[in-house]
Image (cartoon, rainbow, N blue to C red):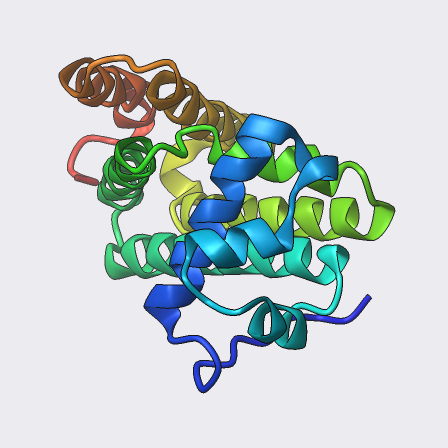
Amino acid sequence: MKRYEPDEHTFPAKKLEHIFDAAIRQILQRGAEHLSLPDVAAECEVSTAEMQEVFPSKRIFFHAILHWYYVKFGRQMRSIINMHADPFYALENALYEFAELCLDRRKVGISLLRSTVMDFCFLDNELRTEFMRYNEIWTELVREKLHQSETYLGSPEDIERLVCYFRMVFSGIYELAKFNVPEDDILASIEIALEPLKTRLAPGMR
């Protein structure tokens, strides 16, 4: 499968995101199989010829969407997690940042972003593999941070359970945003979700 590399000479980054957001909304309305690249082009006020030059097939377009959102969100998560040596503060800030990203997507009408991406990724084995690879990258960020405090957090098995727990918390934040749970309630839920990590850290670690 041809990999997508952003070409800001054809479409600036802001325009690319506008195109991808429009595509996500169309997929929500019609389903991935009925996505129309000419309709996306029209909504975003670009020519169909330009769209076809950059994205010669729907499959390449789907890969571009997947790459764009996971790289964008992944960079933000990596930056925040690596900014803090303390695993509690690292994951606390990552969860709040992820909540903000989900709420931002909700404001522009694509709160179902993740499930929409899954919709088209699971139509194609190569896209599905790429989707799973990106998810594992996110998981590894959490795993690496927790292993830095292995002395305080217990055995590797205990840490792996915490990794699974935080995967569940990240997914839960997405689901809460998707179902229009009030922002204050989502933020309060994050505070509660951090308790298991807080109680496992030795006194004086934080």
